[in-house]
Image (cartoon, rainbow, N blue to C red; front, side, top):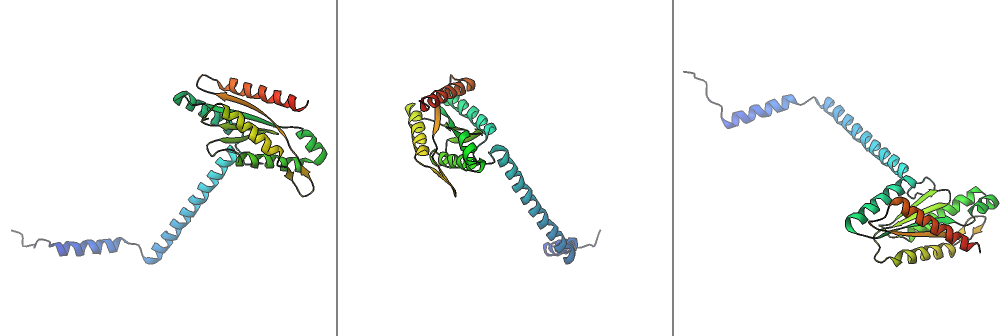
Amino acid sequence: MSSKRPDTISSMMRRRQADSTAAQPPASDYDRLMAEYRQLQELLAQQKKLIGSLEHDAMSDSLTGLANRRTFEKELERSLATARRYGRRHAVLLIDINDFKSINDNLGHLTGDAVLTHIARLLRQNIRPTDIAARLGGDEFAVILNELRAVENADHRAQEISQTISHTPCIGEKSTVHVSISIGCSVFGADDEISEILEKADKSMYANKQTSKM
C-alpha cells in the first residue's frame, strides 16, 4: 500500500501558483513583448485608417467631396431595389451649370473649381440625410431623392435647389460669380429601369437648359 499522502486543496493551489509563476517570462522580456504588442496595435490602427481613407477616396469626388459617378450608380441601383421591394417612389435630379465653360475661359480654372465646390456645398445643405448628392464629372451633378412622400415633392425640391443656387453667388477673393443651373427631374418606381430613369432626367434637363437660353 502506498504511503503517499493525498494532495490537499491548499497544496494543489500552491503548486498551481508556483507553476504559473514559473511560466511567466522575466520582467525585461515581458516589457519587450508588451512594447511589441502596442506597436502592432498602433500599426493595425494606422492600416485601418488608411484603408478607410482609400475606400472614401474611391467613392468620393476628389474636388467636391460628393459621391462620384461610380457611387451614384450603386446608390441608384439600391434605390431602385428599394422601390421594387417596398413599392416606394424616388426621384433623380440631373444638374448642369449654365455657361460653365465661359466661367473657366473668362475667370480661370481656379474660379471654376471654386464654383464647383460652391454648388456641392449648397447641394449638401439643401437635401435630406437620406438623399445622395453626387458629382458625375465636369459641371454635371446629380441628386437621388429617396422615398418621396408625394410625387410632386421632387419638382418642388428641384425648384428650391435651383432658386437657392441662383440667389447665392459664389464669392471669391477676386470675383463674385452668379451661377444658375438647369435641372432635369425623373420620378421612378418599381416598374422603371435605370437607363429609362436617367434618359428621362437628361431630356428634362436639356429642355430646361434650352428654355433658359430663350
